[in-house]
Length: 247
Image (cartoon, rainbow, N blue to C red; front, side, top):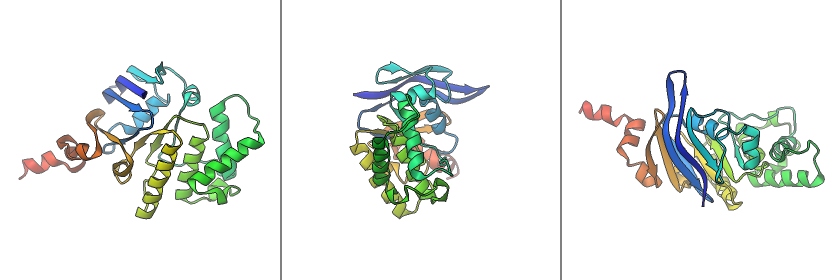
């Protein structure tokens, strides 16, 4: 079943075209990698899906509901959550309290928490592997731990679709392996994922399908091994055309 569908999506800023005629979908239980060089339009696409920006034209459907003009909080409560390329914890609050903030934002009804809410938050911290830091101020966590906290806080909104923005950027091979295991655990909870991954060290290993962008346009879509052999993708990443012209 299709969970998210983008139809002829366009976004311009003044006279600059950031995204042009984007069509694609994410199905239930699927992991899709969103790849492309810097400036390709990946984060802009995330911002459109989450309601931070409104498209210049086109439509965004989630669970067959047109969310094109929805506010971010309404989109979150429908079941879409995200992380950001730069971690954004509340540094003076404990790690556990940061997760509870995500839960409160996701349910949208009350600022009061119940004992079972704290139990849920601790369970999420255990899933991402930082339950031993539950009482630690978030500002004292390492970069890797803050990324894990971002993921736990996003999961606390109880999403059906999770957008991850460069979740493994700057990670060592060991940490990338841990991130892969973590993403698979998230999928086991029934969450679909759309992952921005500029360096491809994560998306090639976990994605069922890749969507490649360059200069705001979709240049390839399909299984990872096919997309990474696509000539337009090789050109975008490696400058293949420039090489050919100088051979």
